[in-house]
Amino acid sequence: MRISRHARNNMRLYRIRPRDLEAALQAPDRSEREGRYHVVYKTFPGRFRDKPLKVVYAVEEDTVIITTYPLQRTYRR
Image 1: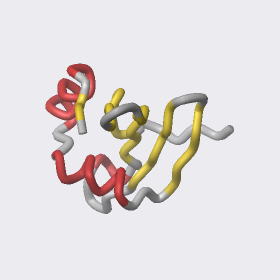
Image 2 (image 1 turned 30 degrees about the vertical axis):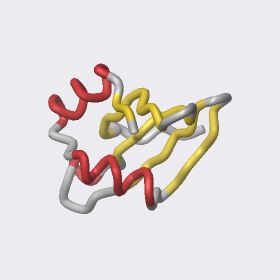
Image 3 (image 1 turned 135 degrees about the horizontal axis):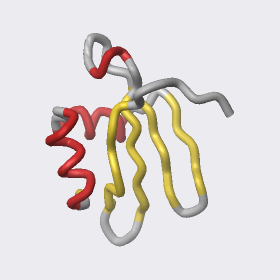
């Protein structure tokens, strides 16, 4: 698994642990597909103000994490 520089910076900024990222990828609460990107959401009770963590990634030779951050507010589609 390769994590982009942008994602590593967001992990540092929002205090996202590597194990949070792994948990979101292995057992997401919700997942979507947007073109070639996969989007997963995972809620961690007591962390990130109880908002879900959003992880956007693309699958190539190895998994590439595009970005990761906790949602600030809920959006409806």
